[in-house]
Image 1 (cartoon, rainbow, N blue to C red):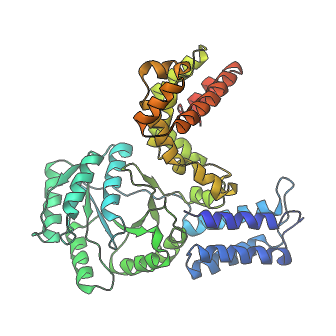
Image 2: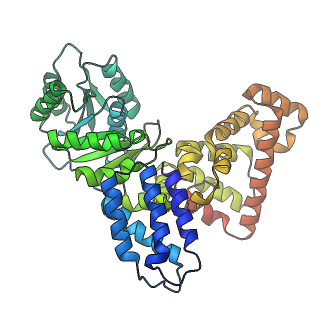
Length: 448
């Protein structure tokens, strides 16, 4: 998400290079580029107009500090205005009520409501140590109830069974009763997808809201649908007292406009973004961090938080001690590191948070993908324990056997061995400089 927008804004900073200050003349072309970039990203026109006017007022006549270029100064102003549009800070769920705290999730068909309910359940269980129960009031979509049941098992939370013969408000009432019996802290209520022009369905969800009396009513927006989703969110907000938004499918080719428009149009904060298919792929929405990503400055804070939460710190410490003692970095260690990277969402998720990735070409990015990581894991897994411990044993015939066993080619096996040797050399150099242990502690065992 935001790739094209990031590229455009990077070009704007290059255009202002060499200027002593920002003036009406030299900023005109830059603001035009920003305008086109935002409109191409499907940002709503009222948002574009207000954001650019604020940027222009703050930027014109701005003296460039000695440590900054005019482009950097403009980027800082744009960043502040983006944060202002999206909300100053992350707004958490308000669950301070007598249990169970009911959270109602609404949205269009195919927006990702059921998946978001399961991800949110996992998030509350893992991060906030809440006892969570889910219930499906979607009696229309085939297998919707079964899907939530399966995802709830993956999330490790309780699920209250229902059938499509029951009324949605009856299911919700039974869910609240069962959540009380089970002493659940939170009850997540999944609902059927509906269009705001379908008065019968909108009447149903109003009744459902009245029955549940939720502390949070979240609207799920598919980031791939651009301005349409934002306008629909406004219509839902006029019908229901929404308290927040979940933006889904942000890991795809979405232009990102919904993220910039949603709060402005609805007046409600984006509380979470879904960035992947895995049950763990839900992040709290931090406007300042997203603004940094849009401007190609990365999101190191989120990256560090992710590493701290998902990295195996015991393995990291063990590897740091091993390297410090001068022992060889073997293929078992590389296998562990690759598994940890995949567990954190893979290369695509990590690259999005690294500073400077906006300047990396799409061709270069396409070379760094999770498929490669999975191939590397498969290749190492096809080796014998002895071969993983002593990589020098891997002669030509062994490499051919490993290629057959992993479903890859001998050339791919050779590439893995080449990458392994480069990493092994890097580890030795860092250990000589005394920086190995610090690096491993800081990155949670991830040397990439």
